[in-house]
Length: 242
Figure 1 (cartoon, one colour):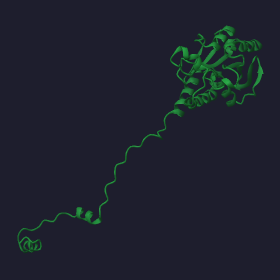
Figure 2 (cartoon, helix red, strand yellow; figure 1 turned 90 degrees about the horizontal axis):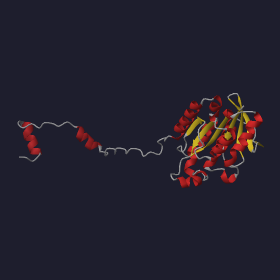
Figure 3 (tube, helix red, strand yellow; figure 1 turned 30 degrees about the horizontal axis):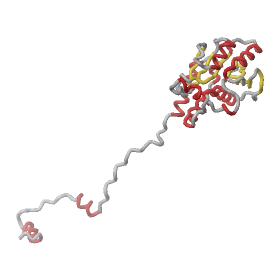
Figure 4 (spheres, one colour; figure 1 turned 60 degrees about the vertical axis):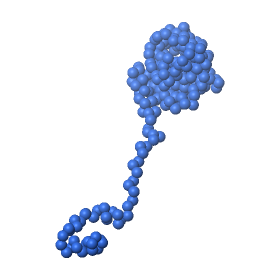
C-alpha cells in the first residue's frame, strides 16, 4: 500500500493559498482516478483508490501545516508501513512557478510541513516539490506562501495540477523521471503561444487600377515613323510640321 500525502491548511480561508498546492494535487489525483469519496481518519481527510494496480491512500492532514507529521505518522503506524511508502506533494519556493521536481530524502528547506514529517516518520520518503516561486526577499516568504495564487497564475496552475493528476500513476510505479517529463511537456504544449494574437505582417498595396485605354497604350509596341517618302510627307502634314 502507498500513501500519497498532499500538504496544506484546512478551511476555505486557505483553499487558494500557494501553501495549499499539495491539497490541490491530492484532489486532482482523486478526481482523475475516481477514488472513493473523502472521509475522516488519522486527523486527516482520506480517500482510497488504485494507481497502476497499487492500492493508494490519499491523505490531506487537517492538523494545519506545522503538525502534518502527526497525521501521517498515525496512518503509517496503523498500516504498519515505513516512510518509503510515502510520497508527499507540497509547495516549493526555491523552484520557479510551474516547475515540478521529485526526489527522495533531503532537508526541510525551511518548510514547516516537511520539518514535521521528518520529525515523525524520518526522511526516507519521496517528495514531489511543486514550484510556487520566491518573492525575492526572505521577510516576504510567509506572506507569499499564505497568499492566494494570482489571476495570472491560474492558467499555468490549472494545467499543472491536471497534469499531476493525469500522470500520478508514474509516481506509484516509481518512474519519477517519466513523471517529471510528462508534466513538463504538458505545460509546454498547452501554454506555448499559438500566434493567434500576433500582429500580421503588413500587406503590400495593390497596384493602382488603370483604364483599359491606358493599358492598351502601355501594351502597344512603338511604331517607327518613316523619315522619307510619301508616307513621311503625309505624316508631317497631319502633325503640322510643314
